[in-house]
Each structure stands twice: as structure tokens, then as C-alpha cells.
Length: 268
Figure 1 (cartoon, rainbow, N blue to C red):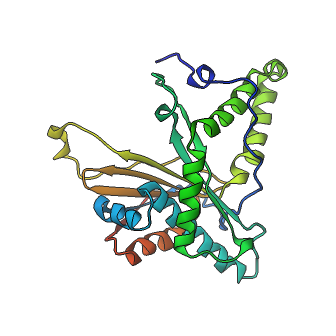
Figure 2: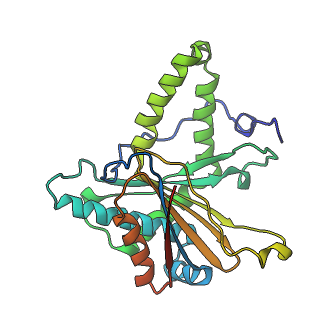
Figure 3: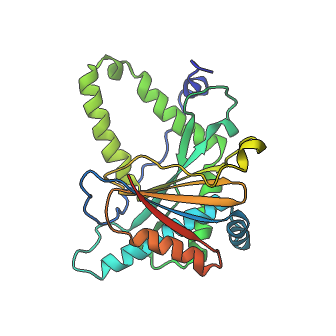
């Protein structure tokens, strides 16, 4: 488990790579100097689950739809301002634990992303339309054959003899360039749901809450990390900008859906 490279273990040579994606819309805002701000909202798991079930979605699908709906509202506000958005596609990265599909005992990272999207050039979306788009995209992409295409592309690039022969300092620069152009450039945000956090019953009564924060990203500007403990769901936004409109819209939407939500803020 300490040494296994699960991606290479499940690599299938010759598979076609994933389809190419267009650049996505990015939130507006100026980066705050040397500051990473976090805002956490907590809500009852049962209430969030009920709101998701009412719309035929899982908790992750529902929260992803709320996130995309909030980004779409920011986009609409910017469209009516002086500086118009250049892009119309809202696409969100949602990490997937590959151990559910490919047997592995690796203790290393073993995950990929699914990428639900909507294109605002097609018109406005109501919330139920976004939920359906997210639900069907995630169900079609979280499938062994589709995930194998991503593994095949990533490992094939790593094993390319020309790439392996390039000096490390050049490779680092080039990979950073590719990450900006073909990675973050293609997404409007990230939402990661770790699911329920487990701990011994003796400890649980002494723990008041839980949460985690994703790393700062200057291009995407914001991200959302989700985890649950006992009966409470904790949703933490990380942000490198001072604007709070996305978080405000996100939590307001939960309240509009009848979900009691408590919000706290902290700076990092």
C-alpha cells in the first residue's frame, strides 16, 4: 500500500482519451494579498438529504447543483455590469474515489474528477434543470470505462519516453503551463465531498464540529469542501478574493429550500 501506484496498476494501453473541453467561466474578483479566507456553513444532514431526494439527486449532486446555480447568478450579475464575462460554460470538478471502481490497497492518492457543466449561451437554467444536468452527467461519467479513459491518458503521458528524457526543471515549467491551460482553465470551481467522518464513540461526544479546507487556487479563486460528522454537514468555502457573493448566494439557496444553516467565518 505504501508503494503501489494504482494508476499504473489499472492502466489499459491504447484507450482513447477523454473528449476535449472548452475553457470555462471564472469568477470575477481581485486576489487578496497574502490572505486565504474561509467561510463554513453547517446544516442538518437529514434536511440536506431530504432536499436532494426531493429532486432525485444524491447529496453531492444536490450541493454541486447549488454551487453551479450560485456561479450562474454571479455570471448573470456580471453580464449586466460594465465588464462582461467572456465565457458562458460553467463546469465544476467533483473528485471521485477510484477505489470504488478499481480494487486497490494503495495509501497514495487514487482519485479522478467528473465534470458536470451547463452552457449559459443556451439560455437561463432554473434550479431543477441544473440538478438534472448534474445528476445525468455524474451518473454517465462515474463509470469504469469512462474513468479508464482518464487513467489511460494520464499514465500514457507519464510513460512517454520523450517526456521522461526532458530535464526536470523544463518539465516542471511545462507541466505548470499545461495545468493552467488544460487544467484550471477548463473549470469554474471545485467541490469535494469526503462523506461521513467516523471516529470512536468515546471521542465523538467531545468533538463539537468538523471540516477541512482545500488548497488556495488563484485562477478558480474559490472552492468548496464538504464533510459530515454525526448528524451535521459542514460546508467550507476557501477563497483568495474578498468578494463573498458566491458564498452568500449558496447559503441563501439552502435556506430558501428550507434547510436551517449556520454560517461562521475565519481567515487563514
